[in-house]
Image (tube, rainbow, N blue to C red; front, side, top):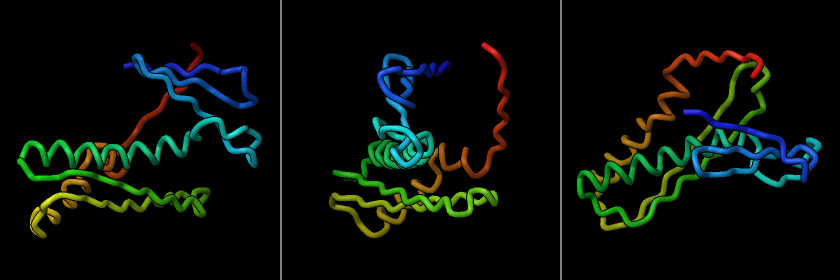
Length: 132
């Protein structure tokens, strides 16, 4: 799969991210010199984790016929030590539905095994940058 990012000259730092037929705008906040016209790359990275947890829990609940109604995931970032190689993300999960404590525990466990969580914590990512 290919993702294409192009500059959007309607903004100072704004970029357009094309993923299949989907478009997302990325920018940086005003303090960083942008206009906050969209999420920053860090925001997108962090939100990928939250979205993956929500989708994984819902997929699993549907597969196991666990009566989940709504899912909310909150991702909190602590990047105060990023320059030292430590980037902390804390996720919090809220579920509604007629769930037993055993089902809630099972779904919390599943959330901790979402593919992006594993990608961020268990996989070595190799990145190569070259001219287009």
